[in-house]
Length: 127
Image (tube, rainbow, N blue to C red; front, side, top):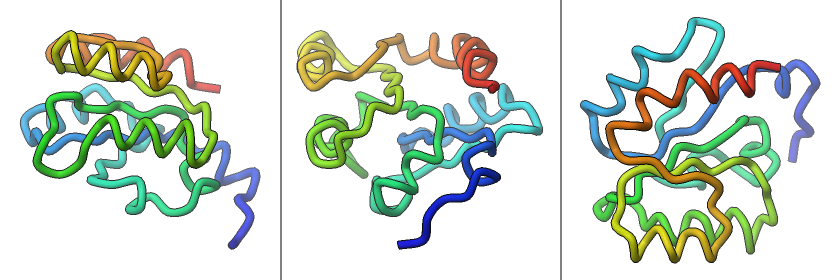
């Protein structure tokens, strides 16, 4: 396992887990050139836990049912990897949001709202 470098950690990047191509395009339009948005279908696509730590936050689609189970994603992050990167959820109904809260997801937004709040998080995590 290769150790991340300081330069790797200083790269501004975040993860997005969704299969909604239209939403991906709308979010990508909000991302400044000095940031990277990586769309993945699985945490395994990112790598080991130390690779996930290189990302400043995760946007997680709670309406997803085809490519991944959002509840499994948060459980792996919090219980298996013991990681506390911010998990910003969007979409979903009250039941899945409650379950995600119990699994320690951080924030919840309506599906269209995530596009408007993304610039706020990019500014907050711009260190």
